[in-house]
Image (cartoon, rainbow, N blue to C red; front, top):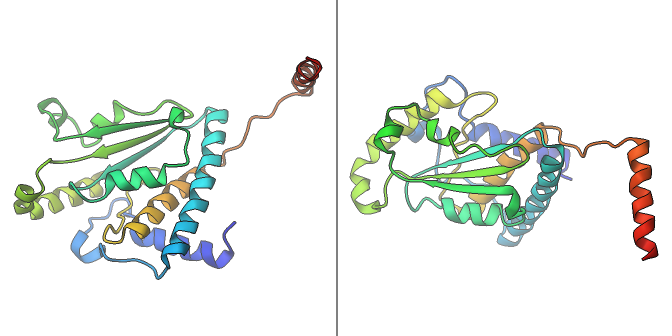
Length: 219
């Protein structure tokens, strides 16, 4: 469990990365890709490991409760570290409860719908976690010429789609260790807010389970 001071720091960092609903943001002015916190490599690894363990516990409850599902959308240019972040942050989760979809350049059909239409088509079922890995192009070098256009498109998308119940978080990507911790905290914070719990069982059902356990113990 994090101390109150650690929780306060985490909340402060989360608010710095949050895209406020309805606000027109400026990525260059409002979000520093090099932002990080002072932390040794060993401390970062230990903190991430603790977070991964907590996420695994939440996943068990998410599946058992069968009421909610979690959709995580990674929106970034190529080579921004999306794949590595998914690999590290989700390493402790049960793959049977996760789905990963990779989106390339939007098709003509997708361009005729709103920003999130193609994500909605692949929403995870209740009790599962879905990673939407969204890419604009496969050519980093050529696409650099359109950097300003991409930033304008991102800002427009964040402005129109960030909501209180499904906010965008702008994660600084220059420091991989901090990036992974920030993503893990964002997911952890969301799952914690769902107040997940294992379903309760009646005394009758508990007695039935105990009877079955006793029968197995006698074999």
